[in-house]
Image (cartoon, rainbow, N blue to C red; front, top):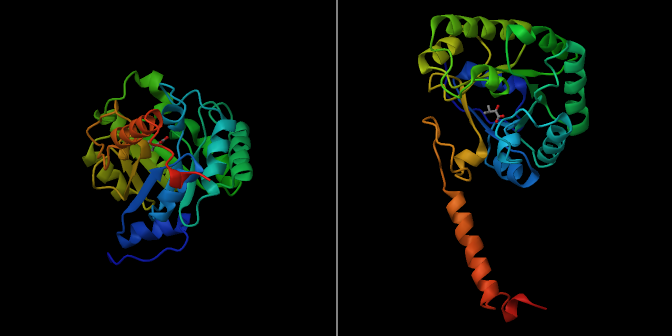
Length: 272
Ligand code: KIV
């Protein structure tokens, strides 16, 4: 296995499989709007996920369940306009693919056609296999998502680590193999033991991208608001914050308020 880093002018689903083969880790980050996506893309992030976490960090909902297909398409099309290099993957939101495969395909087609996205992501394995098949048959690349799947939060009851017990771990490995066999190009594994995640990554040839799944997988994904420290109340062990933007932005905005109140802003140079 070579560890030489190849330059990718444009990341495709094939590039990700090549990265896994070459031992190059895949970087993935969420973005939901044009300005943020421009920064993320320019920083050479390989995959931008327009996650349904937009429901939490953009809209302030407690879960990912309320976001609609129209809202996801709005976020995705804003991101697409900013991106030159990254592969853009869009979550199909809750309620738009689980009930029947035809609806799943219609939702995936709307995302691809109306936003210009490059791929879609769905949560689950065996239970949604007919929907996944239908989308793949239409030539739309599909990323899977196993482990803690936030669209099923009311089934789990909590956001704690999944697949600690043998039975759930076994099902997760089988689901990963099924998604690979059907033709998914990658799988997100969320909040499962690192040992299990490594075992999954070694059992399939498609890339496994982890969030709270340790270092033995093929890439990592985080929600950008968490990485930048814009969110304050979310503090899982897996999260590394690179900035405290909540504080820095707050300080800048307070300074602006002061400058307006004290008539310091605008100065002579800042007017016509
Ligand atoms: O919606 C999202 O941001 C996600 C990531 C947490 C993987 O699915």
